[in-house]
Image 1 (cartoon, rainbow, N blue to C red):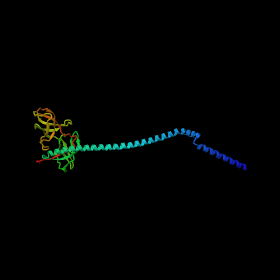
Image 2: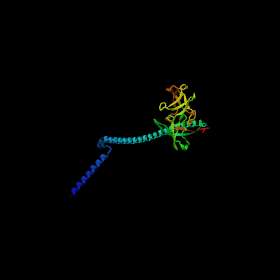
Image 3: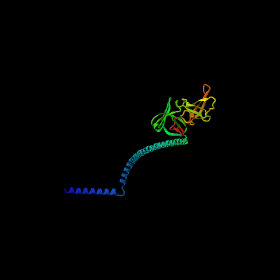
Image 4: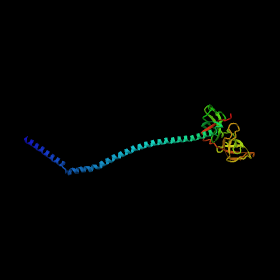
Length: 278
């Protein structure tokens, strides 16, 4: 029993000694074996670490690109909306500018003839062109003092006359209509005639009942004659583009292009009364 205890002490002593030597060996400054092992593991793990690093960086780059794309897409949508809003503002400003020009022209025209006519401005709210009728609707009516038969004009020339009336609106029968005939005359020669619709959109008016020997030629201006009691004398109607003899040989007719662009009328003036007249 005593010998066994001695042997146990010897074994313990040897173990402690070996561990001390090993510890001293591994903690010394020169550890070639450890260095080799570390180098081995470093070489083994380096590609894996590099791959992991590359994978992580690639993932980060992808995430950054997705985030940047979403950010750029959001910016593009915002810029697109801003552009649309700016385009709308530019459009509205252009409309205001053109309307201002038209209204200034009308006001200038109205003031120029202020000593001759009492006029009321109106806006065109509807057009009704067809093969049978040529009319439009304005936003003035009976409550504004409008009466049937009143002349309707623009600074460019004669438009037509008031037809059917409502309290807040009125129909305008255009001179292009088959019921829109009016008295006219050649401005330079004062030869009178009747201006009426041809039914042709290309050359919509003709002046008839012109004597065959009357000096009528192209580019002469046709104005209202004042006959008939609707249109005051001297308002512009159009200009002559062609002259043809009538089949009977006694008369001739002149084809007239109106000064007014009837497809683009937006504002008109209604002649309420002549100054010094009724």
